[in-house]
Length: 539
Image (cartoon, rainbow, N blue to C red):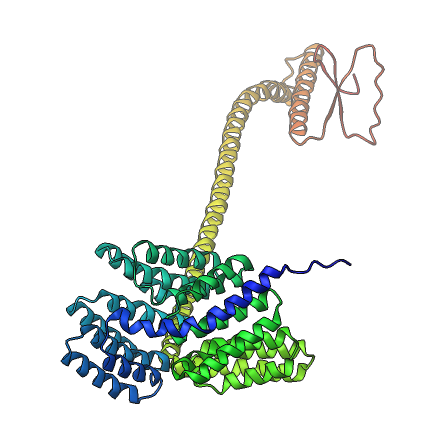
């Protein structure tokens, strides 16, 4: 397999870059006093204050520096003295009220003395950065946008550049690296275009290089780091340059160069006391180096060393993240039992830190939860009542409909029964009328032959001898005829009564048909011919 060797000019360039970073940086630090036209005594005492920024003694030293600057009429050094007191609480990172207090002091003094640089410095580099370190991203974003609007209204370009700086940090924390890079580039463009103070330009370039390294853009990262090397004004900036250059070489898998720059950063931190407050970034890159070179035991030692630092104790979010990284490293090493213990420690730390740092919030959340639970229970009871009432209304409505339905059905039946009764009454009345008419007619028909029978029977039974034998025979014949007539009439009446009792069966037959009737099966048979003649079986 053919391997392409890197060209020689690259090594020459890196060597020259190392020489450049070794010597001119110290010379640039000496130019700071001349650039800001600071009295040598004040500047020397300021450097002593800066070296003790992490010690409580810096508070008294800053008061002394403030009075010395006031005697010489140097308002800028007075603002710097107030910023030193703010820095003490900022790096201590555990007293947010004190940070807010001194931020307001610096801003008020900067407004009175017309020094907007320190006004926006305290707002952006201290207050907003504090919120960023505490991972209070929403508050930091709100303050950054508010500062951007105020700086744009005043057309103060240094304040706009600071706003872009903190916006880049916020987006970096949110892992939105493209937005972080865009805001960092805008900060640099404004600084160069309007000729702003370039004291922190080296740090800005090195941070931009670190962002390019995180996104894998090695060429852009190296370009920014080279620019950072040309404008270093302090040991802290030089330290950041070394650390981020080591991060770059780890990205391109040049572990040897990364180790060289890590050693330079370590030596600088040992030589310069003011650099020691920024060792957390060095520790993070050192852990990456040990993991990249598979020196896992040393990486674990670096993790343990970090846990014992003051910065780890005050930065809970970084402490938690480092604990998680150590647990992941133990899993990678196959030490799963230790990793399990470490994950348990992470959980316990998160729980304890949350209870410690947010007791009021926990009480508020508990109160809100109980209130929400009570509201939810009341809502459920109300919904149950509504459902119960709705169910009762539906049941009552159905019962009403059923009652109306059966009532209507009963009324309909009663009406039908009443109508049928009326029809039957009308039929019965008509039948009674016909019956009365029939009886009245039949009484006449029955009385006539009966009178004849009774009369002639009385004549025959009398002892009157005036009637001869022929007359008696004639009378007997009349009695016979009327008797038959009366019998026939009575038979007709009985037949009609049988018709009403349905004891007669009527057949319609032709006259040519032969008639046969079994009297054992039928009580009476009536043959009705086409001429509707009534006949008896004797006919």
